Image (cartoon, rainbow, N blue to C red; front, side):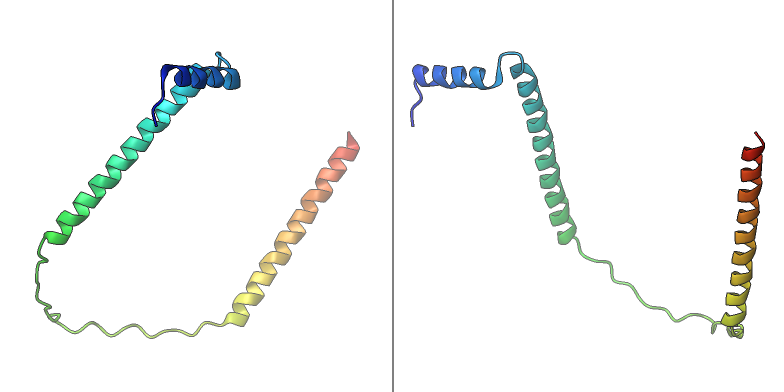
Length: 115
């Protein structure tokens, strides 16, 4: 497909008519930024591939598993948790918080009505 000067001129004229001469510099600037970002991302992906291949070629270090010198100390006995007592305490805290909030609302309302 050969583009002659007439075809290139028509393409440039169509672009000018579609976008206008004022927006072309901004459009070309943003296109250049996009291409620069795209190229840097592609280069980064290629660098990652090279690093991954280098890591795959290295030989792993073999090690020995050594048993611990002494047996672990006996764990402390687990105390049972009384979930009902914790729930009752949480409920009491919630009731107290609701009462405090209600008192605060009442005092705010009385202060507003006093103005």
